[in-house]
Image 1 (spheres, one colour):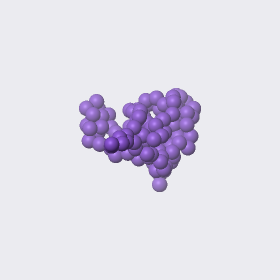
Image 2 (cartoon, rainbow, N blue to C red):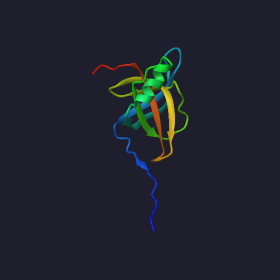
Image 3 (spheres, one colour):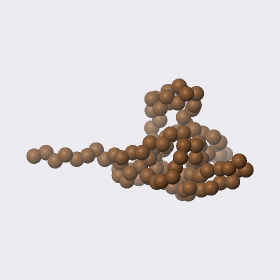
Image 4 (cartoon, rainbow, N blue to C red):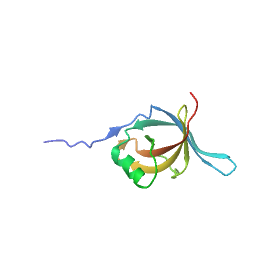
Length: 112
């Protein structure tokens, strides 16, 4: 008898930390999450070309733990890498723990 095991991707979120927030017209930040761990993901050709087709640019994809209340166009700041706009949110159900892939567009770069 063969025991079937699901193909589960175990994620550690150990590539860095990020903050996710909204910003009003005056630049006041309302934080949704602070010091949230993430893992870098490969930026594939399909994602890049799909973004170019709608005159957008993709700079990075990261994976975070599944948390509520993240919206497209929230600002995500990665310490040492700068500010990004969240342009695509994809829930991942084949990971442990459950995760979200965030496709990011660079807004502002922090000095080294």
